[in-house]
Every structure is written in C-alpha cells, then in structure tokens.
Amino acid sequence: MDPRPIPPQRDSWFAPLSIDLLVKVLKTTFFHPFVAWIIPLCFRAQNLPWDAPKTLAAIVWASFISLCWVANVVNQRIAYGLPREVDLSEEVIVITGGASGLGLLIAEVYGMRGATVAVLDVEEMENGEARGVTYYKCDVTDKEQVAKVAAQIERDLGTPTVLINNAAIVIGKSLLSMSFDEVEKSLFTNLISHFYTLKTFLPALARNENGGTIVTISSVIGHLGAARLTDYAAAKAGITALHKSLTAELAQTHPNIRTVLVTPGQLSTPLFYGVQTPNAFLAPVVEPVDVAKEIIAAIDGGRSASVSMPLYARWVDWYNVLPASLQRIARRLSGIDTAMKTFVGRNGFKLQKEKKEVAIQAF
Image (cartoon, rainbow, N blue to C red; front, side, top):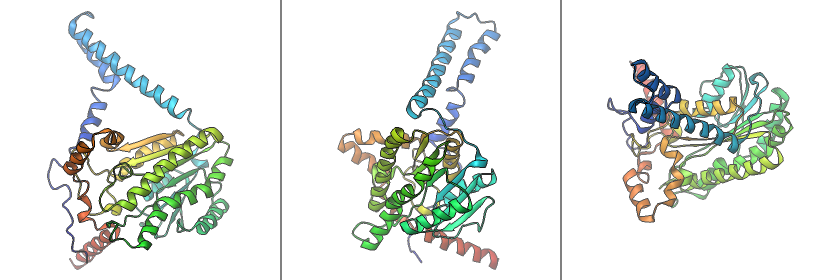
C-alpha cells in the first residue's frame, strides 16, 4: 500500500469557481456579439436617442466585439484552411490508449453516434465493451503489433480516417530514482509510439478522398517541465514538435489531412491520480469531458485546431519570455514542482477503487 496521502478534492462550496468559469460566463454575455447588440437596442427601447452618450458607447462596444469575432473567424480560416467533409457513418476512428480515461470517453461518444471506432490498448476496456467500439489488444510500443492490428482494422472495419494518439503513462519518479527500463518504457509509450502509429496509419489516411484527421494529445508539462516528470515532459515536448513538423509536411504533400494538437493542463483521470492541484482558481483540474468536447467538435467540423485548456494553457508559451528570476518565482508560487509528492497514479486509483467496492459489499 502506498503511504503517500491523497489530497482532498473539492472540499468547499467555492472549489468549482475558477478563472476559466468566469471567462466562459463573460464570453457568453458581455463578450458575445448578440448580447452586446442587445444593450443599445434596450437603450433605444427606453426612448434614448441614437446619439445619446450611453447608446453611442454601447454601439461602439458592440461593434468592437463583433469585429473581434470576425477577426477570430478570419484568423482560423487563414491558419487552418477550409475544413474537410465529415460523414460519421463513413469514419473509422482509431484511438490509442482508449480503454480508459479521455480515450474511452471519446470512443464511447463516437460509437453511440454511429462512427466505427477501434480502440488500441494493452489494458482491457474499463467498461468491458461499448456500442460501436471494437477493442484490439495492442502494445503501441511494439511496431510489429501496431502493424498487425492495423491490418486487422482495415480488414474488419475499413480504412482508418481519424487517428487519435492518446496512449500515455506516468512513472512519477525523479530521474535518479528511475531505472533504465522505466525511462525506456516511458519514452517509448509517450513519444516513440506516436512515430509507430503515424508511420502505420498515415498512408491509409492519405488514400482517403476526403482526407483524414490526426489528433495529438500533448501536455503543458511539455512546455514547462516539472520535478519528477523529466521523462514525461521530454516526451510531451517531443510530440508537440513532432505534431508541428508533421503539420508543415502534410500542408505541402497532403493538404486534405487535418491535424489537431491538444495541450491540456492536469486532467482529472487516473493517470495523474493523487497529484496536488497547484492552484484551483488559476490552474483548475480539467475534466476529460471538456477536453473531449473540443476534440470531437474539431473532428466533426473537419478542421485543424489547437486545443489548450484551462485558460493558462493558452498562454503557457509566454512563460519562457519571462526573466529567469520571475520564472522561478512563478514556479514556487504555483507549486508545480511539489505537486507530484502525493502522486499515486493509475495503480493507486485502482487500489482505492477496489477498497471502496469491498467496503460497499461489506456494508
């Protein structure tokens, strides 16, 4: 039994309150064009003339917000181009590490919506089975197994059109404490496996007339690094660079293939079970369903995208612009380098789950 304590989760009424929630509320109210234009219309309904200071100020604000929304649409179109056509009944979605957590959530959603889904994992599916989802036992760190399963998928389900590279593990030890086998296992699972799956499934995506979509699940840790995550941070930084380089290559050779880079903060999944949240307000734990919604929206829309959440993840690149002294202060205040002290991981999660089940049965 792991002696490390599990930090309490959301033990107060204000725990769900975060800067992300406030921004979300503002985006659907004061920063939404529809709401912004309602304000001057309300003033006009009160018989205020169009040239009244209040009305003019409201019109200027509404115009500014509308221009910002239009600029964002133009920016997305220039950055990612036109979307590809997506027909879920024709899509064959391959998800690595899809037996639990975020991968399983996406698999279940697409399975229920009529898409054909193949899950690759060394572990059995957490829920046993799911409608529309076919499980293939596969170690993605073994290129021969990946090639064998790819052939089975094409024979059983059809030509893959979407690849979601989601497989990951967390060792959670300092570099001095890790064995060479653990280092290799981490880097092969979190980084090298992406090369294996891409090399194996990319030719099939390229053959598809309507193109395909590649989703890469990275992490903000790849930008920041953290104590006891040297292997994980190195791998995530590597797949972020891999994704960006591959996107540049595909833009030249296969422009009909879309790419989606996902850079979340701490996810509320068994992978990081027990990790202490640095700051619940500024850096809240991200729920898998929120990340899944963004990924599914990008795939459904047939568009390339960059998904970063929570809010700080969108600005994490600016961290490296700060002076070194401010970077050190920021790390100390955030607690990023002490968060792993209470880490127990997936095995610890399973142990806690088994204890709860035994207690329920005894009761």
